[in-house]
Image (cartoon, rainbow, N blue to C red):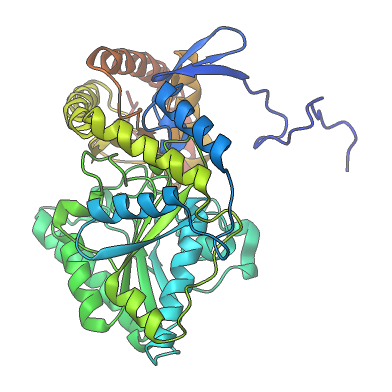
Amino acid sequence: MSKEFPISDSALLKQIIDKKYPVVDYGEGVFLYDTEGRQYLDGSSGAMAANIGHGVDEIAAAVSGQCRRVAFTYRTQFTSQPAEELARRLTDIAPGDLDKAFFVNSGSEASEFAIRTAVSYWRDSGLPGKVKILGRTISYHGMTMGALSMSGHAARRPDYGSLLHSFSFAPPAYAYRLALPGESEEAYAERAAKAFEEAIKAEDAGTVAAVIVEPIVGAAGGVLTPPAGYFSRLREICDRLDVLLIIDEVITGIGRTGDWFASSYENVIPDLLLIGKGMSAGYSPVAGVLMRRHVVEALGEGSGVAPFGHTFSGNPLGAATCLAVLDFMERGDVLANVRQRGKQLEEGLRSLATRYQCMADVRGRGLLWGFEFVMDQESKEAPDPVLAAATTFVQECLAQGLIVYPAGIAPLNNAAILAPPLVITEEETRILLAKLEEALRAMERHVQRWAPVAENRSGSRVGTGC
């Protein structure tokens, strides 16, 4: 290995090893400030996590108070009042008979716990051969081995090769790229759900424990929003084929879409529902799994034990933090703000898309929005993967003091996510859109330079983009 690689003096390993990152100093509301005094509007809530903004005094007080009382207990030795209350609060707002909660530390761990629970459920029900989990070809459920095995995220899977489980995948619900010309939303929903049914049958439903889906695909797809009726149809398919339905709401849950849960949009009740990120709003690493009554009853009547968790599962400090976040959201009627500001953000994004031809398929709900970059809207031709459109756009936004999240899996899509804190105001939303437009103007120049490159690579003429 060359000794010339420019390793920095920092002892902290960075995601991009030789990149120099700004050093955050403090946060206030929807803004972050670095040690150079520069202000950033947090247009993606970090990684769709800082849902109530930064520096909220009520949360700091709750954390401090619980620390003084007791920060940690181990789940096989004690329960705690904060954990008990958090489980009750979450199951009260959850749809249907999602009556039990188990807490972990991250969305990845929630996915792993869901795998273990699904397999345990069928084993305790007398069907130990049902062990497969099916995901979708565009999806993301975490970076641990089991979670990544059921994730269709081509950018994050290759390094692990044979270490991943050989789970199969169904096609995504992705109307912009996969709907047929003139196909109605209802017809496409039926066809996309039918493709999932065929994938289950191809694996033999007698060996499939569960399917896992995001109600809106985040990091892997750039806010792919399914057609109406898709999830209702998927629920019916799972019931008919005796397969559990896992819905991953790590990004969408706890208010991001304007409802407590995005799956409520079609009144679909999954067998297992994953939550995280906004659950603690970034103030503590907490996630969880909500389970329907029949799942827990099968475990109780079978082995009598729940799948194993982790050292910090259900710790009092994390639970108290989440309770404070829920209190803050309910007291401030944050869900109403999400719906109001979501309409404002949607209108602004759709207006921008009429002026910038490289900005396509604005999609989302509440305060979770995404769009794709194309060479031009008519052809829908995606930029060549080597052009890294989403990464370029992130840098242009950063130059404007705006943080957005790159998403999608090139070459199929190359997208960006906007998911500001749920407390963003009307004026702050206007500021976000103004900064976004400045970044799009810069993207116009990039796309115009890229057009000849794309033409040379493809051998055919493409549009000049924005």
